[in-house]
Image (cartoon, rainbow, N blue to C red; front, side, top):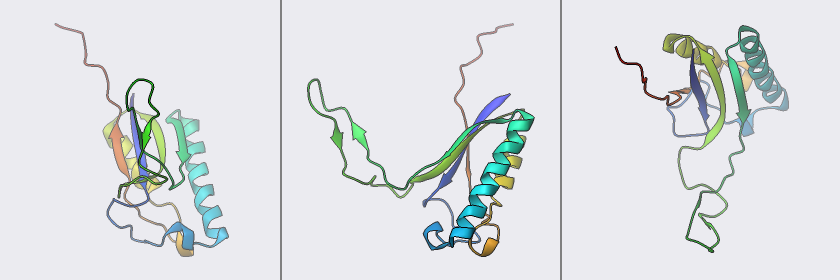
Length: 135
């Protein structure tokens, strides 16, 4: 089994087919989207492939260390990047192909008008330790 991170972006990825920002959706459309995500996670939990997932707020702050005894340095109330993460899901699957299959299914979450978003999701494998087995 290998773990993959499925990343949903607020922006920075190619435009989705149904590219209406969530803040313009009706409450019913938001509820349907969240229900789709929960049903997807529940199904993967049943197969043992779901690890965790969360939706994230668009607000964030970058922080860095600025030396011993000094307060951390921040960039302000918002991250200055075009690549903000909207949410993520960690899956543990048998193959890269299975990770792509599941990301494709997740991409079809409903959006505005109840139509699938067909958004682009980023699939990132977890970095693993190199094998120490020698032959």
